[in-house]
Length: 71
Image (cartoon, rainbow, N blue to C red; front, side, top):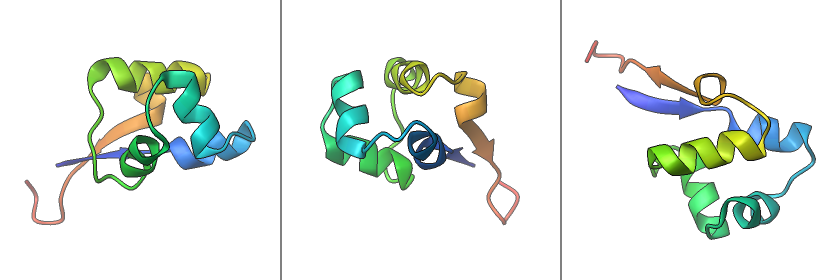
């Protein structure tokens, strides 16, 4: 399983850059980039901060996706 997210789409909806979102949640822009690309799984606290900054619920922003091999 992997954690899929919709951060990029909701950032665009609010006209926020990665840098602006990073500043809102107190992390580096590179962290937002890594989360968006699925390279880095955020802590629960960071996931909640990102969701709040994007005016979303965590459940609507992040979702678990099963791997193609069924694991």
